[in-house]
Every structure is written in structure tokens, then in C-alpha cells.
Length: 551
Image (cartoon, rainbow, N blue to C red):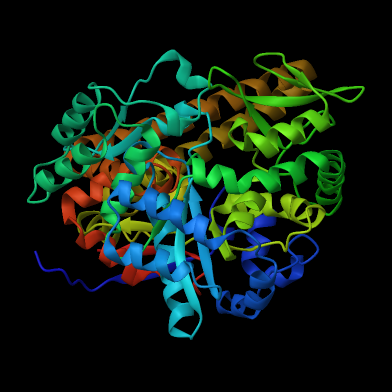
């Protein structure tokens, strides 16, 4: 297969996609209108270059120690020479980082993980071509402890249907940071089943090799994720950072101490910011209550657990019930920073304290979070990072493109659901006389019921009320019969039925955008490493819409 392809694309504004938050869609449409919440918002991505002096002047972490840690992390992951070269460039005092990140999902998790990495890579290259020294960095969220959220991978199998595969860890996985969860030999069975579920192609052997060499018996979950991501982006210079690494943890100590010292101010301001968002017609993105604490505690047994303000100057760990004063927490953070990890409101500040971050690429929820945690930056006297939405794609393969073209469908039509599309196809292509027949029957029934209603109203008004109830039931059953007729028309054509089901499972799996469900294995199996290159070519940092890419 040739490595080049002509990509046809179409754009869809996020405001046309269901279930997007108002805050996010307004930020995408007009970021400068929200500078109250995003003080360093930019009109277009390359405008972040003007912030480089401010970022560099506020960066205080020892670059040599940071890059020593990054070199250890990336060599262990098998990162390519270009990534190691970028780490060397990051040692220079005038280099900035374009950052993104994601949880350590099984086999890299949903496709948006890949799109985040591509966004950071492309942005760093654009800045470099403009004369600024910039490198792409991927923050692997190994400290998170919701293993269930990262333990599955979904692919489109041989029959075009969705197949989900899960790695089952030990019971303790519910409270241990995902990066510290060990992998046993059962992972090979998961990989075998996933590969078997996919149609055999010229890239199946390479896909299995990548998964097998990354997810090894005896490896940790976070390191396996890093190994696979490094392999996929080996030629793109992506730097990986693991916040659980001892060298990274040590460097984070000072910002932990400062966050502990100012935790009461952080909580008070986050609560107030939530009120402001609601007052302005938005939603508070993260619920922050009065007993909230911005850091998690790691117990002697390795559990990651919430700290809560118990009152009277006492802070209590939820899991082991240990109690501390702020002074005690601050002292521990200074001496043993590995006993802590940041919560969602503090994590970006820690990340951008450790790295000279010029901008961060996140998803829609992350963009919304930044409206709250920009206040945490301010209280900790850090310049708030500019957040940009990652690239967003739906891949339409040729067979699904042909189905859509055959029935005059646009991608946005699919949001109406399978039933609506079935009705539309029956109405317009399979049996155009069916809707007319049902409409005629409904009209006749209503005409006769209206005549009956006039007569009954004169005899007894309660009979008319009873008729109104029965009318609704009659119309309901007629509509149900209409839907069954539509389904029957489609089912008579088994090929069409399979085509529609396969199209929805591919383009809108489980009713969600493709990038939020499907794993890269589906497309790597079909197109090999070319898929990464094609999506890199489609990545346009100035594009704020969702892109539909036709292969």
C-alpha cells in the first residue's frame, strides 16, 4: 500500500455537535470574549509566541535535573533519537514546551489520545519554523487512580461491530495510581483476542508486535503505555513525561508545599469561581466543596486517597484516617513529595511549574476546567497557561463514505440516530409510498374521530374526554406500527441493514464521537503506520472545528 493518500475533509462546528458545553463552544468561537476566565486566551494559536518571554522569566525549575529525568523516562520507553534530541534542546534556557497529556489508557485508549499528541507535535513544529525553540511534551497521567476508566480498548471487529477488550487487574487497582499497576501474563490473552477480532491484513502482524512488545508481563501499566506511544511517534520527536518518576516528583516538591500553604485560599477562590460561572450562564465544571483539598495523599500501602479539611486546623486522609496540620503536610511535601499527587484543579499548575509550557492542548472538558483552575495559577503566582483545543477528527473509510453518498447523508445527519436514518432511507429510497400511506390513514382516522368527538360531546362531555385519551393511544400505536414497517423494509435488505449498523458503529459508536470510543488498533490494522502520517498531514492547528476526514 502506498504511503500517500488524498484526504478529503469537511468541517463541523462544535456547536452543531450534541452535548457540548456552552463554555467550551463559546471559547472555540471567540476565546477573547472569555478573558475573565482565560486571562491568556489568544485569537489564533500562533499568537502564543508573544508569551514566550513571560513563560521563560517565570520558569524556575532546574532544567538539567528535569531533562536528566526525561532522558531516563524516554530511554526506558524506547523513544527515538529525535525525541532524545528534543530533550537536549529543552536543556537550553530559551526553549519552551508545547504540552498535552492523557490518562494511560489500555493500548493508548481512545483515538483522541493520538490526536492530542499530533496537536502538540504540529504546534511545536510551527513555532520552530517561526524561529522559536519549542518541543512537544506528552504528560502521561500515571497518578490517576481510576483504573476502570483506562482498562479497556474498543475496536471495530471483523463483522464491523464493536468489540471491547479489558485488562483485569487486582482488586487493589481501584485505589493505586494506574502507573503503578503491574501487568501479568493474562495480557497476552487480551492481545490475542483483540488481534483475532480484527480482519487479517498486511499490518496485523506489526500491530500485534507493537502491542506485545509494549504490554509485557511484569511491566507497569504506565510504562507500557509510554512504550507504545513512543513506538507510534518514534519519528516525531515527542517527549514523554511520567509524573511518578522519582526525579520528577522531587522537582515538584516546592509547588506542592506552596499549594498546601495556600490551600484555604485556593478552595475559597474555586468555590467563588464556580458561583461566577453559574452567574454568567455557564456550569461549574468541577464541584469544589468547602472541605476540598488540592492534593491527594499516598498511604504507606500505596493507595492514592483524598485529603479533606476536617475543621479546627485538621486535615484527614480518607483511606487511612491519618490526621495532619497544614504545617505537617507542608513539611512532608518538602521532604517526601512522593507522598502527594495533585488533584484535577492543581495538576495543570504542577505540570506548568515543571515545564516551560507555552500552551496546552486539551479536550473539551479540559478547556472548561481551565476556567476554574486559572484561579489556582493566580493564587500560586504562576502565569496561567493558554489552553487550546486538540485536533478533533472522525475518520470516514471508503465503504462508509459510499453508504453516505448513496443515501445523501452528511455526518451531522447521524446525530439524529439510527431510527431516524432508517426512516429517511425508507421514505426516500426504499418505499416512498409508505409514509404517504400512513399519513393518509392517520388523516382518515383523525377525521372520523373528530366526527365521533362532536357527537359524544353533545351526549356526555366525559365521553369526549375518554375519547381524547384513546385518540392518543391510537396515534401512538399507529406511529409504533410505522416504525416497525420501516424496520421491516430495511431488514428485508440484509446488506443495507449491515451497512447502516457498520456505519454507525464506526462513525458514531455507542452514540459518541468516534474519537471518544475507538482505539487506534482498528485503523493501524487497516493502514499501518501510514495512518499516523495521514492524520499528521490533516492536523491544522488553526482549525477550531471538528474535522470529518474521508479516506
